[in-house]
Length: 396
Image (cartoon, rainbow, N blue to C red; front, side):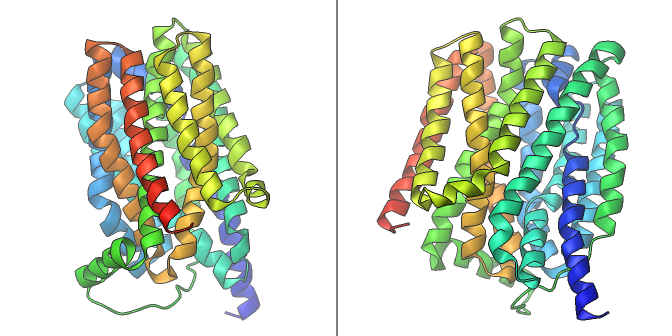
């Protein structure tokens, strides 16, 4: 294979990643998934337990799958992730009980762990090979924008499918939508990973963990900041539907709102690279933490349409946070450990969510959603604040 042909194939990787993201995130079931679980007899607290099981499954395999990606290839890892995710959705289509949902979500979590971090690492390494590393933030933002735009479109169709054919029909439709993503992931070209170091498997993982948390202090706090804010936005993704349901919105309206929320994320992640022109890294980090914490706090003191506005604020912060904080991590991370480090980030997001979400769900069941939001505001404010304080001492 000639050098020019190889570079063209690496360039094609970028476009294929857009297609994979669109396929993976065309989640027709998402605008009604919490309502689907509740329609099958689950409380809000049990829904959060189901999602905690998913997050624990992702966390359990997150770092090993990142290492798998670094050693055996991004293409194979992404293909496995997409295929296992499709199998999990297939099982969810047939589940009708709490434990059936748990089993399906665990399998989906395994698939998600193989995808998490690997897609970003493949993008960064492909750009590195064709001397376009400086385009990473822009393209990562636009990839995330495509993902959320895809979810936004799916939300409209998902709400209509659920209203006409039932909520379970949205799961069958999404299973079909995953198939093109599997084919695209198989067609990717493996980029050459820089500075490969041959070491024994677990010894190398320990080396990467030591580098992340001890050798590179900036990276340590980038990972922890990104994990805390990632858990915050993930938590809102699962509490938005119960909130909409609590204020009496119909399934069709919830689908439209879900679409609007994801379009908001898409717009801000698409244009986030412009923020670099007038804000420092530390300024962007402060904006993210303050915006998310204030959004949760305001939800604790509001109800109805006003509360919906604060959910939009958190989704705006989500659109900014994901590409910006991933970029911070990638800048500090060598290529031979990039997917593993991004998987460490994902591991902590899922662990925080798995611990916190069932507790917040319990508060919601026993007390009110507003009280759960206030607890979330304090928790995420502390998590983000500690990281910001540490980074300020390191002169970010």
